[in-house]
Length: 422
Image (cartoon, rainbow, N blue to C red; front, side, top):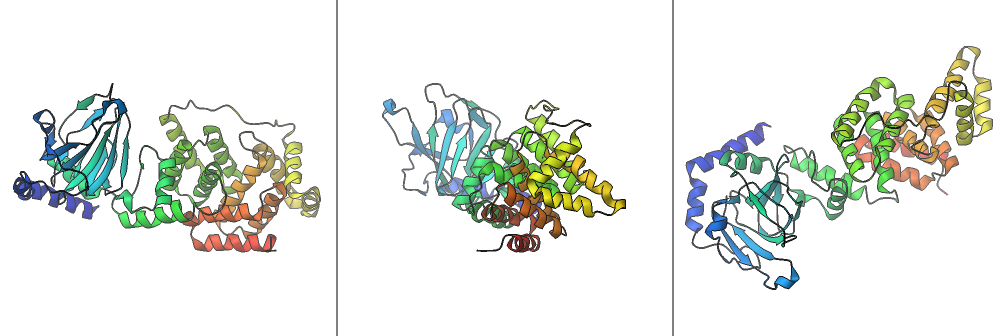
């Protein structure tokens, strides 16, 4: 935080001292060509009045029948346009130098050649050059027949200094990571850790690129397993971000709630309670009416029988009945709790099938650590309901960035013991 604050103050000092203004003044008449596209002419007054600093405009298309106006805009160092929006949206394609793009309420984003910005209709934003670099981007006007610009307040020196000091260069992420981000967060990343761009780069490329590319898990399964793991690991920030991404990717509120409820018998209500609150906050902010439709399928009269039936279907009647029979007299109540509470109250619920619930249980137990005996039991249970070794290995691989190597390796050791390599 101190580093960002210092950088912001230093950038502001450059503006107030006139250094960048002087730099711009020296280059006002002779624009620097920083892309393969023509620089064009100075912005006409009808546009330049909405810019701080000097910019140039070069229209690249002329045939109006194509209905896709494209122009190259070149910004001198420190130049940026006002906050504004487009009723029909806009595409920006960075083609030279270094610049910035920022939507209202979100961190600024560094733009380098090859970066593409998809601006939604009516999204309030600004874009321009870095304080010490020329910048060019192609501006593609969407829905030109009805698209209207709405110009707002200037981006003053303090706003610009703060934004450029803390922006994160998304372009540092590899292609796989960027594709994953665009799927989970089509409107931008909610939290990226502006003060630690290198950590964001390392984690993002690994968790969203290398790891995501492994195995055959669909996005829904991967996100639900990570949510379950985050609960077990008590990762509140990771859970909130993962939850937003999961909902964006099509995981339903009911599925999220059921993953959350299932954590109660395995992680404990003391650890789950905070995540219930986080989940409700996120869902309510998205306009979801709570409570959701109930998913319980048992009653006090039949929860034991239905729970026991699910236990037997997962682990086999011989094993479950043997455990119940072998339990000492003073511990038989725990065996009954397993049947009527753990399985009867939770595993019988709707919203998720038993196959998915076993994957979530595996994810939570591996993430908790110290539960190797239970991990092995649920590896066997997963295999019985159709989750093979390849699937379980893919799940634990997706959890690696969130739980670390020791617990991941312990989980894989359990997996190899229960389901040896052929």
